[in-house]
Image (tube, rainbow, N blue to C red; front, side, top):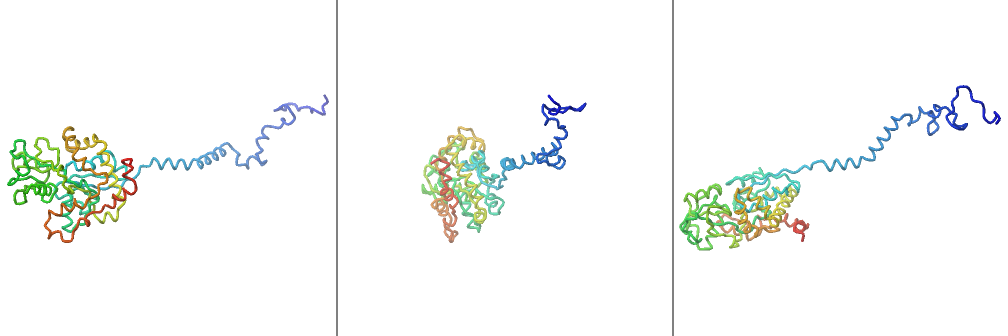
Length: 373
């Protein structure tokens, strides 16, 4: 064909394709940007700039997911509070279960649980050293008569769950035979002292008919019983090595043997914290009732008794653990009936009870959810 259709190539020229359009130098193509501008003026001028743009775009798109992931992994800050109680008795089992099973943690609390003897628990709560108390109803009534402003927010329990114990070789066989005897109890006005007085009245024995020997705690009571310094001791089961003279739980005596107490000012200022504590406590009751082996394990851990002893004592307490442990008026009144009337002044059970937290849990469906009702 003629040269007018295919011009002759210069010597040394290089063809980069098969047609006339492919003759452009490769360097010239790289100088042209997609917009037709010179390459050095384009934002796509280099691979580095392009990679940077892609990185920023990726971070922008992934930012919400990264933030959500960080939020999920950050540990939740828990509110630190203290709970103090006065005796190693099975009435505290739901609290122990709640601690062992992480139920307080579940509701956002870091609860330090403290065991103390004598008047220390009441003094600690009254002074504000701790936020929650778990001692006898009679101790709270006495504290309020002395000028404190404590309030019952939950029961543990509303009925007497306590026994009278003797040595195995004791000739005493009934409560009525305790007339003229010496009984070992903890401090004056404590649950053991008050319940002993109430129980003995059911068989016609008044205060002047017996002698009470006061002790700092339950171990000291049974040390006195073992040495023969007292004829009987009043405490909850189990008490291996001693004979149970009377199981007072069978009498179904209304009596606030133990309760959850707080300062009234704390209830007003930190209601949500109090509500969270009761959530853990109420769920502790549910677990203790529905999973006895967990309750037994908590009992064995604190009382250092054999599992068989813990299991034998469990039923009498489980029978009085209420799903909604409202503080009953008659259980508080039973305590007040033991106090001289002139000391009560204008104090009534209603002034000592605040069931509003439990009512809130009931109305919200929280308790129904626990028991799947």
